[in-house]
Image 1 (cartoon, helix red, strand yellow):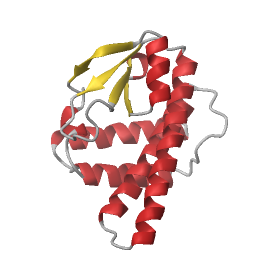
Image 2 (cartoon, one colour):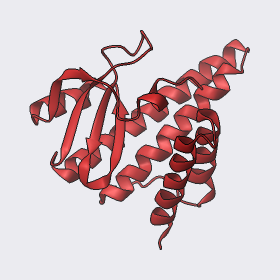
Image 3 (cartoon, rainbow, N blue to C red):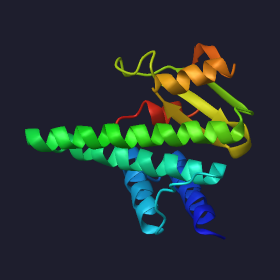
Image 4 (tube, rainbow, N blue to C red):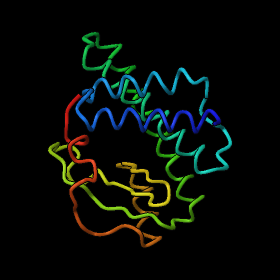
Length: 172
């Protein structure tokens, strides 16, 4: 089993533990963050496979979530500003990985739609992408990705409950 397969298998075990209630969302995020760092895999510069793109998505998503969690416990204005910049940077890198994955899939077996959120800020912005052959669920608010999904006719003009609604709408 290569490092990527090892990561995705471990991530799935974390998801299973979260679903069973054996860990909180914060614990899941922390363990996933530790996993992307401890496997000695760095984000790929050349994303030439879907798995590499999905790893980059997970890596940058974990980094963004970690910076957001740090932000919740910070009270220094300068550090808050730096953490906000980190969050934006990591989410932009995550979105680049998402676009690359979609291109590699040629937008096949992809379905996307807006999701219902408890967050007023994310209402009408957050959408979910399901990658059927990869059993993966991605999320974004990026308008470039949204427009590409619409152009490729895989974005459904409806609002749905997220396939992982309990996770999405739980604070951390």
